[in-house]
Length: 441
Image 1 (cartoon, rainbow, N blue to C red):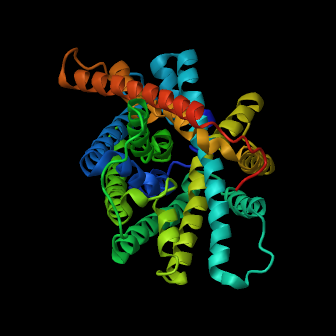
Image 2 (spheres, rainbow, N blue to C red; image 1 turned 135 degrees about the horizontal axis):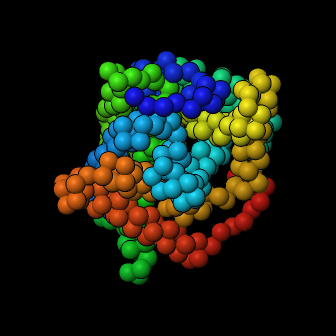
Image 3 (cartoon, rainbow, N blue to C red; image 1 turned 90 degrees about the vertical axis):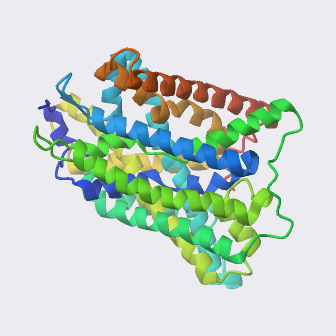
């Protein structure tokens, strides 16, 4: 039904095509839920109950629709191609130059930037886990940078698994631990009860412009809670496909199961976290609130288990988010040499990427201050580009329901991206950035 590139047999995303709906569910769940979900109650602090729930529900439905679009576009009967990577589909839709320009930076940010963030989160949580386990008797603990290095070594060691199908078990572990810590955090927060003096009145800025940008920031938090669209085509590429059994069928089954579980985690986490802490929730999210307000009330075993789940999930998520970068590096070699990448060079590439992310995480620890700005540039990958891709490839009848739906969502996605970039620029100018190079906290 579709043509395959012979080079795909040499690359880590597509060298194994024996995936199934279970593997798809594991990968999608591991890539679709993570520590960014812990910040959802912060958005409710600005939006309040009603608009917070409405915003979260609409964002979930919107991104679920664009997921369905990408699954359907993976194999195109119109062009006779199987698009195994997001950038391939972008180039086929918008042209080689424009498609590369539109997709390259967001995808590199979503892969490399996420891996950097995972090193920061995983390393910091590892340090916290050590302090919880050994208590006040801790002797000469490692520095923050050394904890980052410990986490990176574990991630690089695990990254030597050859291809995307081979890490299905890792993704399963990552998915289980993500569900576990999300559930554990909101259950413990709700069980401990509301804090005294909790208020649910939406926080307003001193001026109208500050309030407006605060609302935009809250919407950005909700939008960024849903991730993984840049990996959907790659996950589907691991499946066999023919005319009678297209890969879109098992892929969509896996996506439905995984996003049902994601919804069962994110909505209680957002609602329960906001109910428990209200306006008192710190900007870093509900996990920080749990440590700040209940470190003496909750047993060390529960706190330590929560930290351990976060660490394991971060190591597991690192693998699937790094895979597109591994694939990109190896594809450059195979294009030039016309042969598969030798095992030792593959190991070198992966170590270079892992320790490169570690270096950047240590060198530029304030990059998180620019997350809103850079994230706004990456948002169209999730909410806008899939809609324009459907219009260009499927060519629905003008003024039909699908035509209007994709145009409206595509334009709204680009507008939201632009406003979030503007809000990010305003926040950087208004608050400034403490450029503490090589000084991670």
